[in-house]
Image (cartoon, rainbow, N blue to C red; front, top):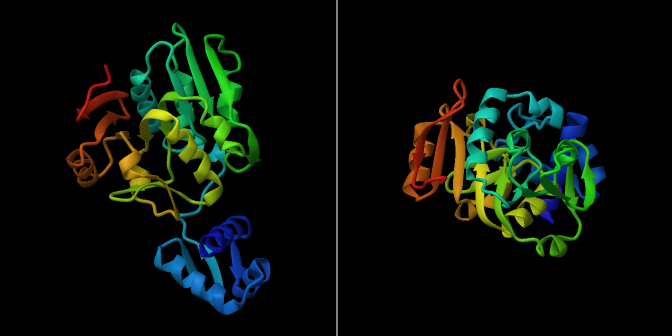
Length: 266
């Protein structure tokens, strides 16, 4: 119940920018005292700020729309995506989640091999619609307009389609927690994509290691490999490597792989 309230509070703040305790308690149909406790907890997590009886999101926590995110850190995303496709073999079945970094992988999928793609990203499915060498399965469910993603409403049906690799993005990453999202609607579909894949590869640029988000989407023990850029703090890279995670570091300027720890993409 508390987690649901927290998620709804965050969603209201995303949409309204700023809310009073009274507005939140009316929307949640609970007491202002309960809301104040919730706001105290969210502020302690670094997700919101409070001033003069109002609450608002911290700048780093506020999500943006899909097309806004797509243009952010473009060189990092492209270099990460180019490294990601090196893990793909002919006739692979891959999952691409709703994030813009995972979506960027779509642009670099090879034309000369047959592939199957399972995706919760509406824009990914549209982009692949002209690729005859790629069989595309779009997750069924309700459209989450902000991220152009589909929230799967029949996860059992999705689990009937085993995959080789799940390419997963995140709003935030930290050790030992793993990958995090800003709101709960995105989490369950990501978890399901991970559950059907033999290997989970997290795609994150360096800024994701500086953010704080509310919902743990993929625990660290379920992440097999991490692809990130060379601006990611070395401390985080060292921790991941020490935990036996496969870690690929790319240079955004050249789109080349600088380091590849604990594994080989061949």
